[in-house]
Image (cartoon, rainbow, N blue to C red; front, side, top):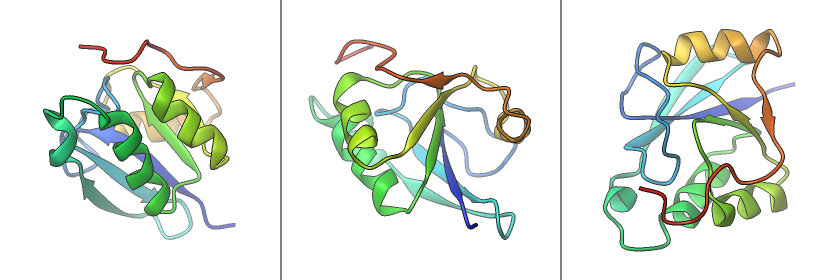
Length: 122
């Protein structure tokens, strides 16, 4: 089964750190577990957005075809988008994406069942 995992990040490769702030991350590294290849989806329009960053970022992850998201924190509006799209959300500390990916493969990341922060988290 092809599965794409999105990682919130400020970098552009597997050495970049998982970003703790989902909606205002610089971008999302979309890793395909079937091909072991990845692409990066930019999120610059939401980095300084006054509102709606989480929803717009979540829609970008959905559009990229991700089945799962690995991030530090996820707000309630973005979490609602993921729940409606059957995208599972996992928590990771700010570690290199390669490390978070290995933890995900070992089933060592905690799945979030609700938003990790209130909206407009700074």
